[in-house]
Length: 305
Image (cartoon, rainbow, N blue to C red; front, side, top):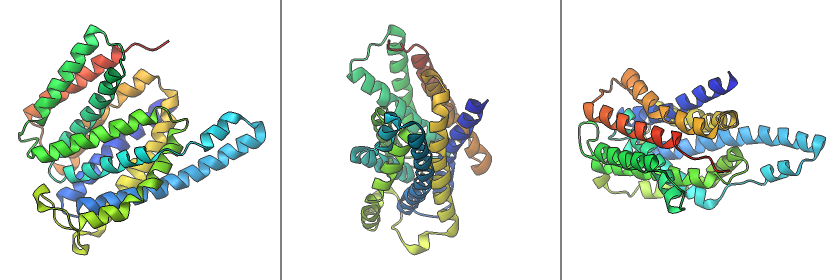
């Protein structure tokens, strides 16, 4: 029961990330660059608070049992490369949602993450069966179909940026597999991401209009935009990741991979309910093809001895 509750809350939080971002940008409450900066700041504050409590509990365990593994957990502080991937993910995510609707953006993001991670496994010579190869090819074909300009994808540039965001998160996830404590690593990576904040603000003041955005100004930032950015950072990202990393040990690897396929579906439902977004036939077809192919791939994955 605990696994079900934690997993459900985490998946809703991940889907809410897309909703908060799309809501803030579609309504013009804030510009994409300011949204990204506030999201990173609020997520960092939330995660630092959670890590402090986590470290205190671990220190008490050290005093009680003096386990070497606890010291290893406390020394897991992420990396600069992971932080760069995190910033690229967050920035491209925000810019893309200026033009993409909630469900389409979430599906492109999720698809790019899965394809990146599967592609990395192929590059590392991970052995795949015939069914897995077929599922991978079908997933890529569905992704290409989804990326074609349509009512659901009005801007190829926005779709490409969201795909880049997904690829960056895929890289972050791949690197995260070697972490002893994903929660602490993510927290420290968010702290490192603050180094990019002044750079983002500086570049944001000078970025080109070709990407379809307005220049940063105080007039473009409203209280609604700040609240949505904080909700995306502190609640959907900070608390969402923390709850997810609590749920993961309670799930099998295959279960953890499969349940994440629900995120685009949940995001689509949230977009329909809160933003009155319309479902299109190309989106429904692409969703069925991509998520179905990834599901088949995951179910046929061999567990290493």
